[in-house]
Length: 188
Image (cartoon, rainbow, N blue to C red):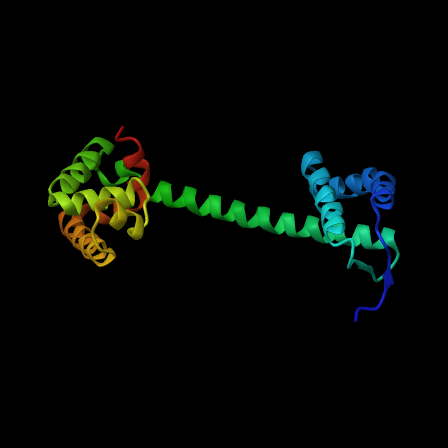
């Protein structure tokens, strides 16, 4: 059983708590995040969590200290998440720059032509299943249901398609793997 101050939170006491602390908590969050919209969002999330757990919330310290501590930790989590997103974005940008077709002497037009030719050379059912999986982003079960075939058949056909595409596009594979989505989106 947690120790601390157990407080019954009614709708009116929650409203009073919210009105009495929102602005100062938002200012505190803004000082940490330097983003007014996100600062208010963080404070709203803290109050939302309190409201959701109003029957079981226990304040280990004063209510004000609890609120500041909660906002502080949410801000830290947000900043950590932002750093991860920025690092991911840097990695993606770096990979795109490393895989620029011009750097390998292959133009986008040539690559699109090679990809389309390789896909077109697949047997009909194999091509259809590959396109449904990769372009329509359907799951194997969904493809099987649509085509009235077994999931095992879908798996086998996808394996066949991928094997044949690796053979046909072997010379371009490293370049294509990093830029395939970009190019395929520009096929339309």
